[in-house]
Length: 304
Length: 228
Image (cartoon, rainbow over the protein chains, first blue to last red):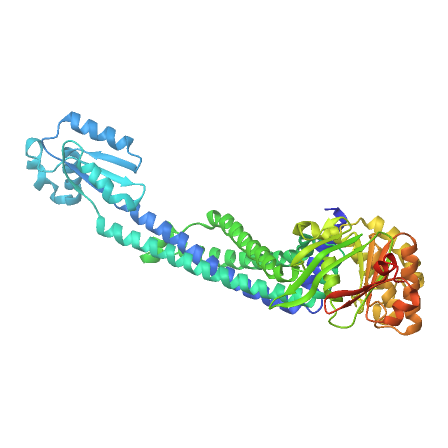
């Protein structure tokens, strides 16, 4: 395509968006698409933060593999090697019988001396491996695997908490996805209708273009540009509003010293890690529905 | 060059607009396609423009077989012909100049070429002084000349004029017909589709008359057979 034609088509697209008589409809479309994008943004931010919250809580819980008193040094070394090689394990620590007793005595504070008689051969506490997993959903198969290691007495697994966390994560994911799809469809219909109105108003020009030999892509181009402009303007507004809102909320939560909100501040995703995702997401979403919505609304008028 | 070979066009549900039509129009001919409403003239034009596809038979226009042409090649086929309509089909908010330039811009023609060719074409149709007038500021005959100028921008091999004098008074009709004759004299094939028998009679050119979707008279064929 020639540069002069490209410039002409861009101008036509801009005129479709901002020209007299089209302005009000374009603004209405920007309003609806922005609303949809804001809801999408809120859902996505919520999903990301719930995910981060679940990961944080998951990291606080550990699988404890208790070794039998009969476990030999080589059993422990072998278990150590197996855990090191296990890809599901993010980290683990070995706690010997002595360390377990010391830890227990530490919890008892001034009454620690009560346990002093359990040192050496009398120590009833088992040696153990405290394990953190990469993915909570793989908790049960991992526990089964650990229980088959030589010298293991039993494995303590926080399955109930894990299942609650997993359910929470899944619910957020699927609900977010459903909302996203609905909003996507709504935005697409709105953009399509706006473009369809412009196309209808210009159907005479389109039919002339067809008769003089304009290609379909040439005819479609300005309308796709119009859709992309609606998507871009909506994405800019959404990005500005949600960035402001997120920064405000993050700062507010970070300043809370106690309670549940303080715990949230430990796992809330910082804006620095969010802005790029938001930027790509909003512009990608806006451009996609703008471009595809306008292309779809044109099809009927191209059959001349 | 136009070639219709046993062409039938049926619109669903079962309305036969053209029935086994065979006709050949050579390069450089001036032809009237004559007929009353419902004779099949509009379908004849639509098939030449590939707005519609023949149900049976073969249509060849300017070397393009329109029964087999790919969708993406249709615009390029249309650039080899120019069309003039009874209702002019000008864009009301564009000047005469811009209406003609529009047809060039949308076919990806360079601005320099547009600036060179549009004044030339306007001059050719006698509207050099009216380049900046909007269609509403022009008479019917002048609007039709703008439409004709637009049809000529691609230097077409074929000009199809659909009732070109239908919306203008008799004096201006003569001017438009003279212009079409002048275009024809440069070697361009001209097909004038009309319901005005007098118009066809006055110019004594080849006349193809249609009725009920069939050709009932073709003066060229009659001449060949020694009827005329």
